[in-house]
Image (cartoon, rainbow, N blue to C red; front, side):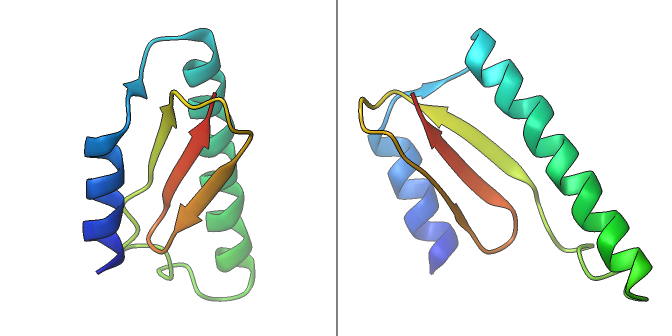
Amino acid sequence: MALQQYSTFLAENEVLSGTPEQIQIQKTVQDIAMAAQKYFEFKGHPNYLDEYAWEYNLVKNKQRNAWCMPGGKIVFYT
């Protein structure tokens, strides 16, 4: 259900790509994903995030906001 809402949100909003902000977000989220993986490896659960399909998007919206959903779906607003 969350994935369906996520897809609907992206379809209804302008998703930006290739901007300096989006590139910065991409690097930051990759760092977060790597840190999460290292954490779970340290805790003895190296496969905990195997089913995560990390996805991060920047949407055009004047509101200052960001949110995430289960499975590694993350949205930032401009």
